[in-house]
Image 1 (cartoon, rainbow, N blue to C red):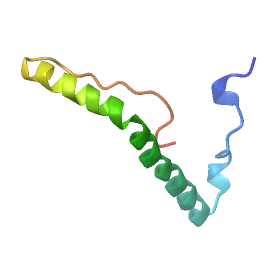
Image 2 (cartoon, rainbow, N blue to C red):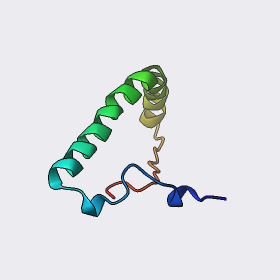
Image 3 (tube, rainbow, N blue to C red):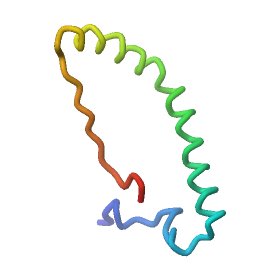
Length: 71
């Protein structure tokens, strides 16, 4: 079995990339965010519409994340 963290990545060897190539790769990855948010817009809208009244009644929101952000 191959562990997810041991799988090959298109970003293996970041430390060997030129500054230009590294910045270009980061920019290309960042560009994917807009499409992903656009695809999820309806779900995000429903979340906010349900979340706001609960927050106004004293509810709490927990942010939980995982991954290699800022690798």
